[in-house]
Length: 65
Image (cartoon, rainbow, N blue to C red):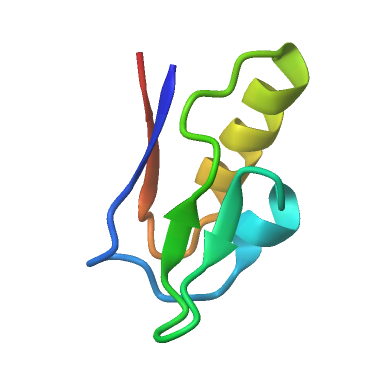
């Protein structure tokens, strides 16, 4: 599983960072998402990644198998 972020769709709300600060950060210049851990491995990491994808208001995040 891999986390994919679309910077064009990101609105910089930071919800992903709140859901999983170890996997996501925001760019200092424009606030768009940066993926720090693109491949969640544990069940807990996968659950947090799914939560972040689900709450992203810009639908900028997705998960690929």
